[in-house]
Every structure is written in structure tokens, then in C-alpha cells.
Image (cartoon, rainbow, N blue to C red; front, top):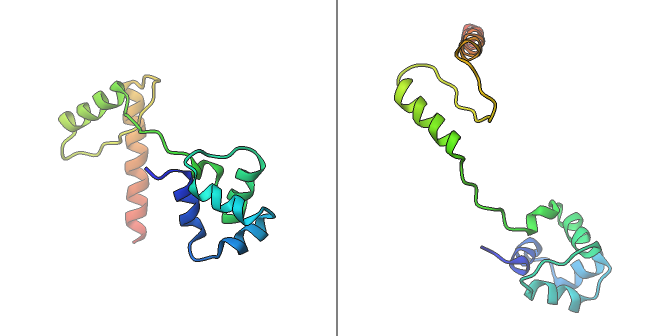
Length: 120
């Protein structure tokens, strides 16, 4: 994964450091140092960088690896086993959904799909 400085350098692209530093109202040496560091600065400087480059502050942080829950995996396995060749919806929720509600949702989706296909 890219560290903070690499991400900042990529955002800067071909724009000279001096130009970016002046726009941010920081010394060019500070910007140069930021591009070399792996840790993420805090406070105003991080906000200035995000605003200048038009990215969310979260852009500079590494996204955590997403691991599906056991219940999500079990639900998808259930769908693959029991609904081959039929209409099915996969969604994850910790709230239990009974069979009557599932059928009601499926009915509404089929109805909407029929309306959409009739318009074509």
C-alpha cells in the first residue's frame, strides 16, 4: 500500500512543489518533507491538502481490509444452493427476515421489473 507521501506526490502530479506550497501557504521545504514521510500529518495541514486536491481526508488513510461476516457468507451459500436459475436478492442484515417478507419483497421487485421491461 502507498504511504502518505506517495499518495501526496501522486496527487501533485506535474504541478511544481513551489506552486502547491504557495497555494497552501506553507514553505516548499514543508511540502517536500511531507512527500517523503510515511506518517499522516494531523490538523490544519491535512485539511489544507485534502481541500486543495479535492479529496476527502480519508483518502490519505489506508482502507481496512473488508471481511464478510459469517452470517453473510452463510446467506450467500444458501442462495447459491437454493435459488439457482430463479430470481434472488442478496443483502446482509443482522435482523432476521422471515419467508413471508422475502416473498413480498420478491413480488415487488418482479412487479417493478415487469413495468420497466414493458416500457422498453
